[in-house]
Image (tube, rainbow, N blue to C red):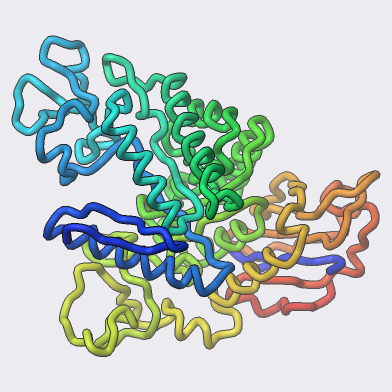
Length: 463
């Protein structure tokens, strides 16, 4: 295998907005002149319209239940009762996570993760009723699931320290309300709603959260924080350790994996690593078990853009031009500089149009693996059998386990070379390991997928 490449072998085969959903009127109160909220609802309605046309489309959304922004009317109007606050005569007042409340020197509010996010007081009836009503309205609009983050801040003690047991109690109240509403509603009662949270808050709390049985997935974003600088002992060892820790969490706590390698809060893969390693990590993500989340542009290998650098640039649909890489319609061309940055890659290789025309582009590899994940049970629900790191190469297999060390259906063996040098991998050494089930033979194996830029291997080539 050449440096930083992967292959996979396969054996076998204003005022108010009103929408009408299912004949039921759903209304949203909007502040006058709140353009961004109106625009958001317009986009949401557009997505829901597509969803009604394409039955295979599902929409999930972030549900901010523990914090709001400084621009929220509750905060602007000084409604201190709906927030976690501390008075000057309390211990929490001098806590560094508490900040001045609207110029009131005697009151501070709890901010998490920063001062820009005031924490809501879930002991307040107005908070509970408002959130519950919002959830019901989004369900009636057709939302299929909610990402519930920062669960630990649903309940804190007098000093602003998370109270895990009370937070889980509130979470259960929230998720139970969702389930009861669905069960009691004639249109929704057969609908399946996915509820998930993230490890980025407090892992111990999320273990308890999963024990309630109400969360279907826990997002594992541990790979979103990895970088060349943090992997000082080598990328392969770093990746293997992260995988091992993740599998321990899932096995011990019965999690269903939900892999996230990039997100809006972290630098893009192609900026934390070189382009080849970024493509290799995306290849790996697409061959792991469970669900996955790809940050837009990851399938193209996009990197951070702009000055200062940011991961939140525009999507690169076309080569550069007056329409800003296809971001604007023809009628909006030549508007000048956009608020969001865009790529200045002189090779013009990081856009959808050019990559779609290339056989082995990052986009085409992504599409190939995505289709395989949809069609093959081994990649959908199959187990993962991992081997120790062999130098800079990580090897594992995916298959549905049968009886007596056999497999049912196809077996995929994945080899990932995170090193800088070419490495020869002798798959025959794994004939007697658990990676290859006893009822499968390497002589029948063929190449199923490779990373971009690999020329010595081709699809369907026999090993």
